[in-house]
Image (cartoon, rainbow, N blue to C red; front, side, top):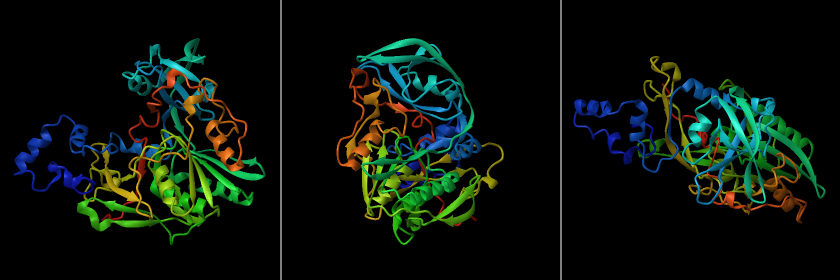
Length: 442
């Protein structure tokens, strides 16, 4: 933390001159019962995104999309504007997962887990401290929530999620619209993304809609690459400028839009191939409660170069990058040199970023067209990619230049106050922007 942390100069205990002697230093360390408590004590008050890693091997598997999972993502909404009880809804389901096999589908509603009503006080324990769900299913009729009498049982297993969830080409008023649902910026998705954009290019799409509403981020390198695929720009164009803390200001640098595709296997770069690129004047991004980090970096980095249109909800506002640091010799980047006595690591914020125009996004991005999918829970959420799916329908309407058939929202009291959390935000690493080290590692 003393070496890398962005706010190192603001934390007294991280100053080289704070402790009078080694005895005082060790007394401070020994005042904590565990390592995570020490890490939290060293964090800056306004730091919402640094986190502790209990097992870095499990963490690195998650970066490649592999984790213990039920196979669906969910959002949580207050049932009333003043009450404590919550209702959950299914955002999407992974094909051939336990949730899929159990019959869960996008838009399904549930009020309880393992016989207990979801509340603001217990949802973390109920949804994240078990490997077995029995969901109490519910429905909404005329603004009133009631249980259906059905339960759905789901068991968690180790799953690998493909972040390229869905692609399609839609016809709207003579325009060919490429549609991509991308749910995590993962290094191992580069080859497939390149194939998707090759398909878009060969089919001569006129417009592009990229659905990032459930994308909490991932690697900055993937964001740089996707910017090249979307914009057609090359590496002479600045994508972002990184600013480190006072102690590491000499590392400040600009990173480019990529116009070649780095190919990764198991986290290691194995090749680089030609990039399939589009040459469009504008791009539509669908955004939501979970749109963060590398997703926002993509939006921000493209705004100086093309017309960027946002449809959905306000984004998180995480214009910060982090590194995985191990209990290893300085600069703490080599897992191979980590202390073999444990698997703990930390993921502190090490930099802030802006785009080519010097713009950041600490408060997130406001949509150009606000559409909240929780307004449609009573009428039922269509599948992602359906032309009447509320966010996509709005994008197609803007592209067509006139209203098209779409669903009607039903604003009931249960959704007052909006979405309070979702499954990705509740994971420690659910919203991240992982950078590549720019320092001599040896």
